[in-house]
Length: 148
Image (tube, rainbow, N blue to C red; front, side, top):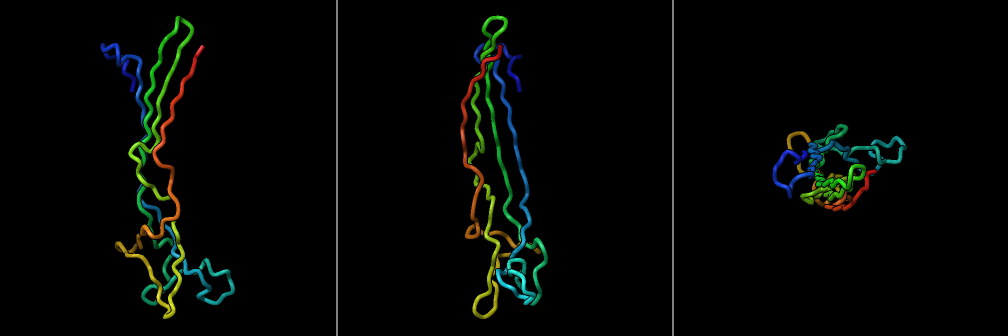
């Protein structure tokens, strides 16, 4: 959005731009961490049982993703052939925690019961105790450019 149309000299030559990203939660596999069907594989690929049946693929869902990046720049003309551009950028402006990795292994206890997370409909919701990593927090960047 260019502010060149304004008559206010302070706002003239500014530009504001933004990237807004909104995503719903992503599906993930819940894993048992052991070889439940005794087929000799490493065990990480077997899914836990729920109500006597092996969970289907992608039975879990992570939280949503929301991010706002903003850039404010100003261009100042220096004569006819030179321009000076200064800018400020903010990434993850509202400092929202967006989870990038979760713990997917839900082993059985001594009685053979799996401690699965709560469900919402037919999907298991990733709980905070399973969060392993997050995308970058709020960051600011300042810069300039000389155009000739």
